[in-house]
Length: 289
Image (tube, rainbow, N blue to C red):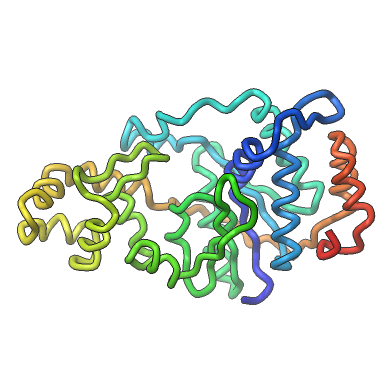
């Protein structure tokens, strides 16, 4: 890869950091700053390792309205954002921008949609993109010039996922990930999938038929139980696939922008993150952190 664009799933990174670090980490005003600290550290580590040409953090709606209209229980099982995390969410865009990292947000689309749109804009301009997330839905974006840096909850570090790795994990190519999710379901999004269809059967169906739609139309060739699951739930499965498919939006390709260590240090001190500020002040480059 050339120096890639780093597109960051900000809600996931903040959630992950909030639950990984104790909320007893307080800032200058006595508020918890664990999510901001953990997110900054994670992104600085990735920046040091991958030397991105720019970093963009993406925010969006918790549940896009059109997805809820397609399936009312979508995201319904997710708990409300804890108050200490909500306070940090409000301050995150300004905090990240102090590091020279730009932000994108939308009241109508989710962060995932913006991540996919940024990756598409980067590839269209001849560049490469790395998507930082813990959401496997983003595997649908993977290709020759787009990889996912998958962050697991509860652990440090990340795994780089390319097209071969998507196929190894799911048994299908990246472009069929929305079809796979529709069939298998996705508990994190409250999508039940096709009754009685697990990951192996979902992959087998897609390899045999080529797509969800072709699996539905060719259901008569399957075992009676699978045929019934496909035909009796056909409209709902199509809705699940649309929910799982990222919705693109026109976004400008961001210009090259190095990480601003001095700006990050000032923002860290303003929040009472003094150890982070000291590290930033003493480093000559991101690689020194």
